Length: 537
Image 1 (tube, rainbow, N blue to C red):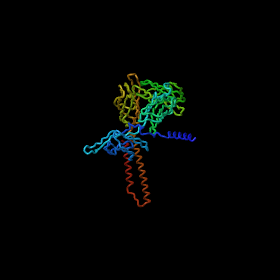
Image 2 (cartoon, rainbow, N blue to C red):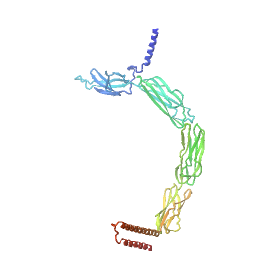
Image 3 (tube, rainbow, N blue to C red):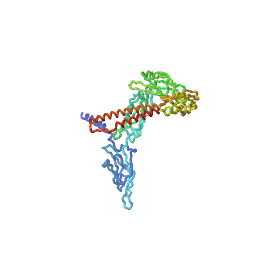
Image 4 (tube, helix red, strand yellow):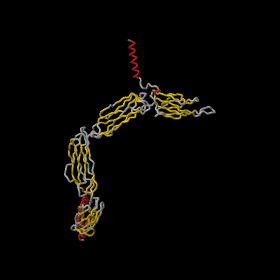
């Protein structure tokens, strides 16, 4: 019985030892050293090399062909050993889990033939770290974009290739697949490998996912992560991500068309249509159409409607109307939009492209100005008429002027009769005399035009206003104002005199200058005489 219990106890201890023994229980002879992280250099007596936190120093040379190499960490000597050319030694830092290999590639003692002493001996030293595994991960899919509205792809199929491109074997490696919420259709999301040798290529991993449904274009990340241990039990992580674009399950394709090019005497046709390029039906879709202010709308209609769409349904000519041009040029027609609220509670808006329209023809503008704008009766005024063709076609233009009653034509041109080139301005002027006071609004100038396409029309100018002043009336108003001012001054003087008398009565020390009243009367008489003389003129 005792032997049986002892056997069970030994088995348990053996199992515990097996599972409690970490990967760090390895021999230095088992280490795969890293070539990619090696450093080397020629060390003189006392010279050093750096490798991460460690300093490698040539402590001493002897004539027997040995160099003493010291390994320091943060200035503290960790290990020291004599080494000959072609040999080396290994050091394990158990506290920090580092392994270092020192190799003497060559040595030159430089022994003087006469003295037999070494003169500046050197050693070519190579220093290696413990190699670690490193996984190169490649993710391939059939496409970078997937559209659930088409039948081209039913699934997202991915292939994953992994190779250990590091300097050492990997142990107990997990491969973890993060599909960013995509539903797995075939394969697994986690794989485990007991070990992966240096340069080993694993068998391809194949996984398949359902194409997710989103209401707007969405990028999903397929991320592959490897977690492995090196010979010292350190966990190493490598990762790779591939971004896949998923198109929305519903897309409203809005087209707004307009006649691309018309002449000024033509009309443009506009229509708006929508196609539900989706796998879901939609209700309560608000369709809005914005009209342009650059052209006149010829039809009366609503610019907003609410509609429902079945999957793959097209509604043609939701809006249809004509536009009449008012000027030439190239114009952009505002876009139409469609807005709906999806089951996820979010509101989505789709917008049509903005079409353009080119309008050709002459665009005649007539402008009339006067100088000066205010005159006296009988004075002359200069009237200037400007003819400008703002369009992109030449036109023959003829203007007509009207001289109103009470106005005398003095001199100048009263008409323009010539070809107005596109983008050019022309002007003529004439002088008139006005004899009656008041405000005179000049009649508009009328212009008729016709171009090589037989497009013709009529334009009229603005009507400037001239203010005519009667100078005699102005003089009378000035005289009346002067008399009123004199009377007011007299009243004020009288009031002042009365005040002075009152003051004299109250204060005996104040005195009135003798003769002041007589002087004031003389000045008043002169003022009356001057006013009467101006009236007689």
